[in-house]
Length: 167
Image (cartoon, rainbow, N blue to C red; front, side):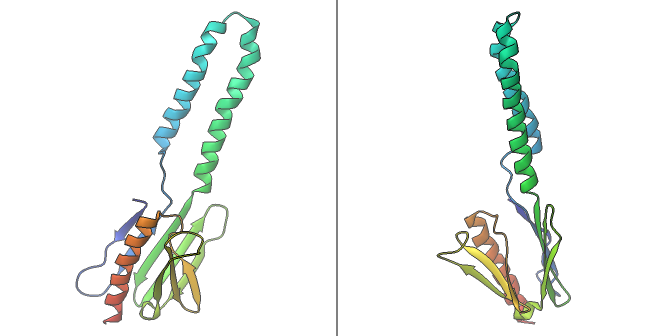
């Protein structure tokens, strides 16, 4: 799952929790290397029949460009997906930090007692759009997560925020 409680809230005592969220990767780095290697091998297989002919030199640049294009597209996908959201609850403060590649870190803070968690249905950027409102702002949480995970996350965060309200 592309989210993880790095510090789980304790059942009793002061509530301190930390949650990290990141986009799902269907192809891990190891799979990336295997895929590129397999693609290059499969493309090179028909070239064996062309060894010693001038046709090899005509086809080689195009097949090399195909492998390079696949490499570039997958690498670009990895770079674009370097997003990390970190939600921290400590000492009467809830803090959401979002890191995107090539952008400055964005931080939102509020008092957890006044934070309102909303799971929006209907016309929004994504189904089951999850937002936190407090401190005069409304911020999205986990827009890159699948719908089912946003719903599960909303449920667990709602329980946690309700616990904070009972102090």
